Length: 306
Image (cartoon, rainbow, N blue to C red; front, top):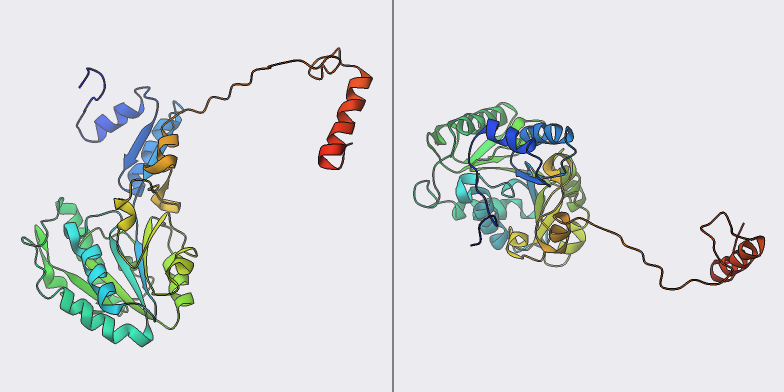
């Protein structure tokens, strides 16, 4: 690699703060919403543009016509892979009442042999274990019940899979990013209710929809940056698709054509190739005749002119 093509600097908050003040052309940050706001404020001092890929509380909708077994398998992996420490990992499931029992049974079966230390690793930071524990406790206090695991599943540095059923939507387990191997499942009476609840969050990063016939239509109604239909996280495996969110999940895109434009500077150049005699419009020397001709041309082309 040629010198200067890539530089790597590692460090904690002070290093990041120095980078914000360093005069770089652009900063792309992936992390929490709170830290993203601090980075944006620091970069504002030098008008350094930013791309922020922040937290998420990604929803998963199971419609009545879904392949329920496939949906359960996808939800299990999407929620628990990497011990749930994935920004686009599944955190909330909304399943319609008519397939609820079948989905819960299949989900429980999918997680039967999933264990930390074999299928996924430990939590990366001790503080995140405390967040997971707090969210589980809060969910149980707000009427949720456990389908898989519970508070005793938190065994630092590992957390075993936890599935919480019908937790109140106001609980921290539903409203805040957990970033751990937990999953809330809520029963809904219709897909419309599922869409409404999925959108009832300040985040808007990713989502998943399982429906044989209406997946794309449902996906288009979700306030997120990315959606997988009848699969999970597949948008992340397609380099041509832009990657990013809305709301407290940040703004800007990486990947795809939009991502390439994000890291470039638009420069508009106009060059006059010829001059029309007597039509010097951008000049104080323009004549009344030139203005009259221009008005006629505008009226001819656009149907009106003042």
